[in-house]
Image (cartoon, rainbow, N blue to C red):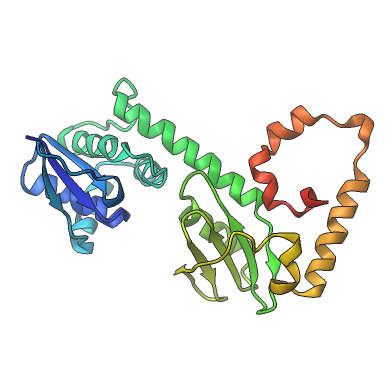
Length: 255
């Protein structure tokens, strides 16, 4: 009989589940997020309560066995939200603790190779968000931008924007996952909000954004349109550098 460990979807929750695996010496085990679990008659389910102390113990243990890059791979793979990624992460961590030599670059192991590939995909998505996010000034004097990335990269983007816009209040909101990161000129904090996906529609602009901001967005769109040279247009190259799925973030693509 397999044991299914159900956790709340947080990274601390995942580490708490992994602590449970080691604590009870489980072998035939699978870890799943609550929303991905499907009860059946053949497996035993255990609901894992997130325990920050236990999660920290696992992470500190990994810091003694893995490089900072190796630990980042685990975290980035987790942010991919791939339904089976917990299995690969568990295997990665079990091998890490059981081996006397570093294993994080042992790509002959399918799970370690998967973690590496997924982490790179998440990293690429993070850098694209860094490049393509466009903030707009709201009537509340907060710079706002919404994103809808394939992976849950918002925690990775926060530090970049804190350094880049240290003198401005801003809110970066993930429409798909319905949460955001807010910077108040001192700290970045995670906030749970329900914000309509229609916020960025041109027809709703006057409801949320200042008149100066709307005029600036229009001016930038006109400049972008008129500065292009049609005879030198290379749409294939353009899409390669800026895939179409990111165009909705760019005001210059709305004119």
